[in-house]
Length: 311
Image 1 (spheres, helix red, strand yellow):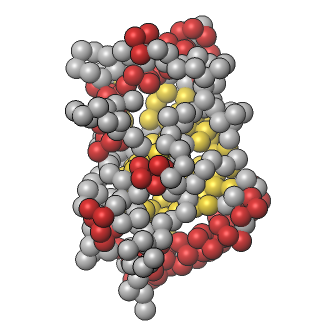
Image 2 (image 1 turned 45 degrees about the vertical axis):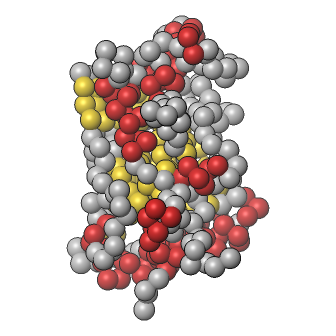
């Protein structure tokens, strides 16, 4: 099949889950763009090749460019729906915007290989960027959040992951790319653990031990699942692919929430439903026990887009 019609996606976008992750939020040094564009393409190619070299430990990764920085790096073409992070706030609840120029997302089932490749990426970008934030994630038990509930149960499966996550022919120049939204959530675990298990389950909308979703009629309107499982006017699910993982230490821990999608509107509608609810005061009560401390919007173009037009 003609590769021009099927650009190569960055393999970390739709990858299955891993044991470990590294998240690098980078800001470009002033005047770095001419060299940075080529170096980023080198990093993306390295990640693509490393997925094969280290297939035994399921390494994968991707590079994404911030919504506010995109035009500095690629002034001649812009993804049709790329926009800054949709910051929102309501009484005692906030989803702030903290934008970065670049996001490097790395995952692997071997921590040493993950650390090695992260070092190699940073060396390729040395002198061009500053590391503004770094977090290391990990699989917790059987893919649970630190709240104790299974995370990502609603994720699309198989080839449907690509359909949900990757831009299609409607924006042909950016086919194979993905809109990325990242929020670092800091959990209030002592407050959460003081709740009775049934109260926790009502807040999530699932049972804790067996991960059984409540019947629709039994889900509180303030439950997390009720607020994020949305449908359009025709009854179609507004899906995203979640690539989230727990992160942190004993003093600062929570969830790195990562949404990858073929459009940014699904994430924005979910966030609005969580923060502002249904217009009748039914917002997501999980937000009483976790706090978003960042919110960033990126676009991860196809590997072929990043490699084109390089000298």
